[in-house]
Length: 518
Ligand code: HEM
Figure 1 (cartoon, helix red, strand yellow):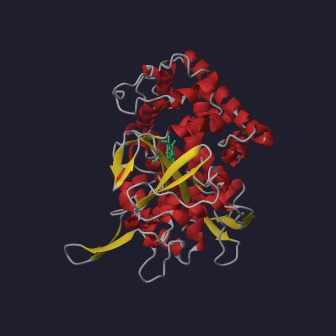
Figure 2 (cartoon, rainbow, N blue to C red):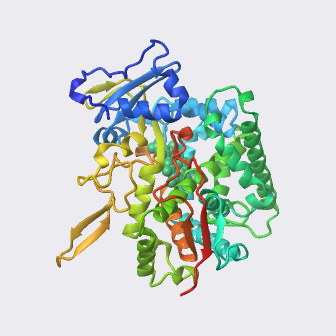
Figure 3 (cartoon, rainbow, N blue to C red):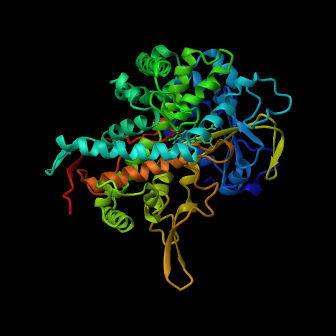
């Protein structure tokens, strides 16, 4: 944090220092990565706003858990329309859909804001909320999670031809986790057709994802023609899948009930029901924009949780004694590690484990770098500062997760280090026994890997289950050993600063073998 204190500020919103008027912070924001990361950290003031401005932008950075909690959990902020062009760049949406997003002034509630003039079928932000509350409803999760577990177990069973009881060396743990999880999560969400119809989708998708921060900028496209080509190939895959699903649905002899949680051709029933929302947009969701929306969904489903699942496994393998601790915890909860291989366990038992949840929270604290953006709905005060209507606001999870408030008093666990017990609290129960408990109490506004408030990540519950189940299944089925120097860790690749979970910058060689059944 900057050494400045909020009381040193007047009531006008202060601006971070810069050298050249007009350009101000333009170069810092254009650079993205390390330069932006260090500028935001350097100038952020605990419990106060600070302004960054430049050519085409004017943001106020909020920092400190109380001010963030108060600001983001009220209904005074809206989704930031400045993000609308991202839909064109990142997902290939047409000008028309970007325009519709920019002009959607109706909010996300059942009733449009008074005075809003949006076509009722084109309330795109509201539609997104409706779709995700269907896709992640209790009934839908009861379909999705067991399918995910089964896909993962099938993958492990089929891997016997490549991973046996002898050690096999592999070049990169990230790629290993990425390939398993892409197939298992995509199949459990979209059904198996998407990957079967597009055998190169995995490869195309990760090439596209490697270019995502370039695609999000307005830089001339000829600078990176391969980025557009990879995005186009992903688009074509989504089109092929959708066309196939539409045709199959028509010819399906057995009618799938309207409220079914699973549909044999569309995957989750919610995905089929989403078509009704598309059909009501008066032609805005044409073939091109349906493919963009499907690609955005695929990206949201995979791009954050997969690197997060890699970091989860890596952090455990790299921490002395932690792998044994987690295996003992899983064996204790399930009555033996074999319960996982024998398919006799309830995912909820694992995701309620205090230790496994603490590792999950700490992994996200260390590796998620999201820029959460909002705009001010109507003029109001946050603390002593008056925020004008339409003022853009940002909150950086990196600034909030990497500051001295996280350092432990014994200095053993600075904010930059992985500490698996950071989210465990110790309390005594009625009979005086010490009990260790996972807790996020008091962390609202401070632990924000999924954002906060009206636009908080709707995939967070599934993401948590996916990370913990993936870890538990892999370490129960295989032995892993890192082939890296002691205390070595890959760096976060900050070229994706602001996009969510960071990918590792270097490869992590490792060896693997099937665990002997005990
Ligand atoms: C570890 C995994 C994940 C992380 C770290 C993550 C992080 C985030 C963050 C920081 C936001 C912005 C929230 C805000 O503005 O307050 C967000 C939004 C969103 N996430 Fe996630 N996410 C993850 C997994 C998922 C999954 C599995 C899905 C499922 C498809 C998903 C779908 C979305 C959607 C649709 C939004 C936009 C919400 C809105 O604007 O209303 N995310 N996520």
